[in-house]
Amino acid sequence: MSGEAILVTGGAGFVGSHAVRELVDRGFRVVVADDLSLGHRAAVHPQATLAVLDLGDRAALARLFEAHGFFAVMHFASKSLVGESMAYPFRYLRDNVVNALNLVELCVEKGVKRFVLSSTANLFGEPDVMPIDEAARIEPGSPYGESKHLIERILLWADRIHDVRSACLRYFNAAGAHPDGSLGEDHQPETHLIPLVLDAAAGRRSHIEIFGSDYPTPDGTCIRDYIHVCDLAVAHALVLDLLGERSCRFNLGNGTGYSVREVIDAATRVTGKAIPVREGARRPGDPPALVAGSALIRKELGWSPRFADLETIVRHAWAWRQSHPQGYGDRATVA
Ligand code: UFG
Image (cartoon, rainbow, N blue to C red; front, side):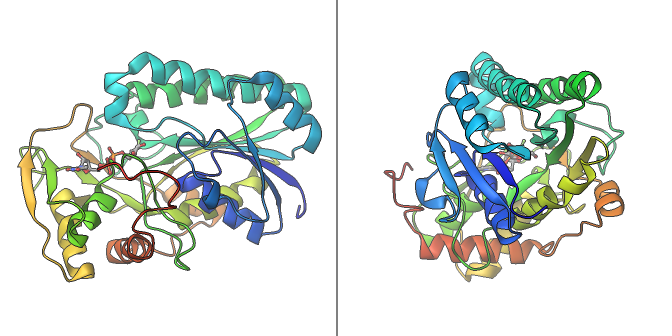
């Protein structure tokens, strides 16, 4: 399979750039399609080809398919903030769904039979059974989660009618950074818990605000399953073989939940710094707890996380944050 060309949309973003690294290391030829609105040119692997384009531009996308003859498509490019999607629901639904539809239609037209979707735990809304496995009821918790659900449905019909096999990988909370320090998380503005906590530890922020301390959880703060971005990347590479046989969907997390306070405690231990905390209001759309049941992907792909431990995840993120205080340095830092 080595040497085959793979299109990675959003390959300049956080999870996408780590997946590109994994694919290049495994000998694939990678073409990144990214409009660089959220991603970073410097995050694109030097051996990958970068096409700066908007996935809404179907003609440009069609030319890319024609030029490279892709073996598979991995679709990361997306708006992906739960809270933002509650403020701009239709922007999320339209952009995420239309862009994915363009890609899926081109896969059908150009005979690309393998499609990997970056999907989300937000598909499951506020489930009452934990951990959340693939049999859990789908009830998206936000327009963002709904947009991914609609894309999963589009892929179902692409499979049934056109034999495009797809893998829907429902990530829980992607975190960490590449252990060699070359890649990491750089969102502008940053909204994710771990980088914000680390910025508070480094003194770049005055404090970390806890969004809600009255949830029905042991310490009152939200529980999430943090998964190392390199472990996510490996899952994308492993699933390509299975797509030669059939479509699949997997929930991807470590199976252990940590509260916001536990994350702050882990960051205090890793950094050795005091982290000022303030308790604030709940953030709209945030479910109290999301913990993955990942038995299926472990069994069917032999996947298992290399960096399951929360302190390791935070340590890698801290190393990146310290070596790249301005992130990739291509945008003004927004506090
Ligand atoms: N949080 C705070 N303070 C902050 C930032 C976050 O208390 O300043 C809390 C949130 O309320 C939440 C937890 O920390 O309980 C994690 O929040 P993140 O913003 O880091 O991540 P989310 O859980 O909101 O969402 C992430 C991705 C989504 C994905 C989801 C799946 O951004 O794309 O994980 O679980 F859908």
